[in-house]
Length: 288
Image 1: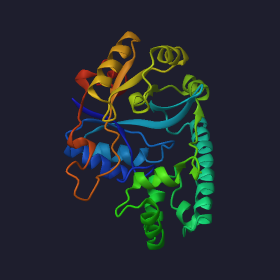
Image 2: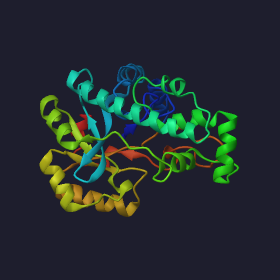
Image 3: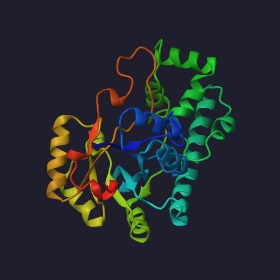
Image 4: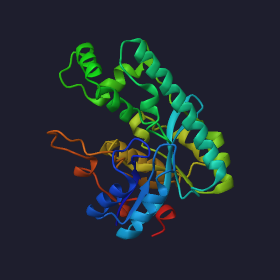
């Protein structure tokens, strides 16, 4: 059965509304789909309504930036109660920290000569502030685009190039993510339930048996095996470790957008599809 357990909407850093996401999943023959926006469950209700219309089983999820000792990892939390006030308190604190840090970064860019109406940019986003959309706003101003092209020496700078140079540059402007301690996340999970999954670990080179054993002891339930961020070799290695740990195995496209332009590959779904048949324990999340 075709599934997709990692999708992002306009409520975080995706480019499709929850309804548009579901329409796209329906065209791809997906029967179970999870909305996993970053640090927000704001799009869940719209997602559920659209899934019901198209006969797709909705899974409620949220992707979190988490601190695990000195590491920074991503977790996806499935089957949560999106109405829980303690969950909302934790997510809102993270959203406020992120908004504050992005404001600081934008102030630095203004000092460097960029034309940015900071309040106007930030006020568009009532939940998670997506840096990719913020960059789109910055590049939409002709003065800024001209400046970026000159400084990067590129005729067609891409979003990733701008983020790397102006937001991930230690010497110029380093935007710090709004991480939540894994201890706090696990403590809340014990109260409200759900399933915690280590998300696309190979993306950050985090395939570490000893560390994963520690995560299991702390309360992490599984790992994302099938991901477009993983090579075939990484998938095989992750799956071996997952089965040694008796972890739930998941898979998702991490879909955000259609790329546009003349790129032959427009989306992860052009080359990457997920079948629940290959994922041991995933029924504990999808229930089918």
